[in-house]
Length: 148
Image (tube, rainbow, N blue to C red; front, side, top):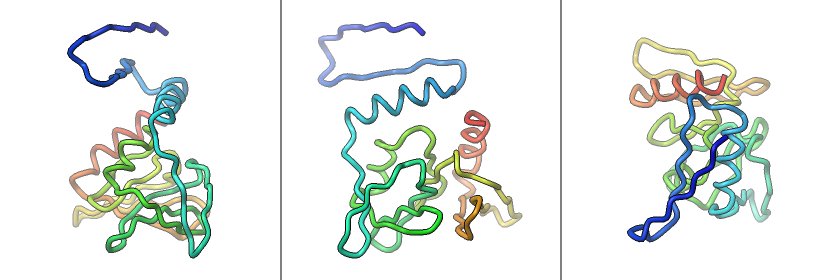
């Protein structure tokens, strides 16, 4: 692994670019480590309680009205961040799959493509499914290939 630091007086903030031939566990860990330095901590809410759930246990995030919910295999928790804010702080294992959803690509069990253009993701050991829009289908397929 090569590490290079370039000083640029024109920049207001730090910019980190990772160049790699393919996504590996090492690259994923590096991205997660860098993200944690700048990320608001994710707190999950259910009723009057706060939960501290591991990100790898989250299958997907989706909007329901004005609220954002994080779904695990057995539960759903409210999150106070917007989807676009989640996209910025989630590790590369999470991928936007529709205007209203972000999925954990490592948790995908199957991807069912339909003729109508909307596909469906199934997750292992749960009844939960989430839909993938035509617009994000190819991005999801590429991410699945990179991470598998």
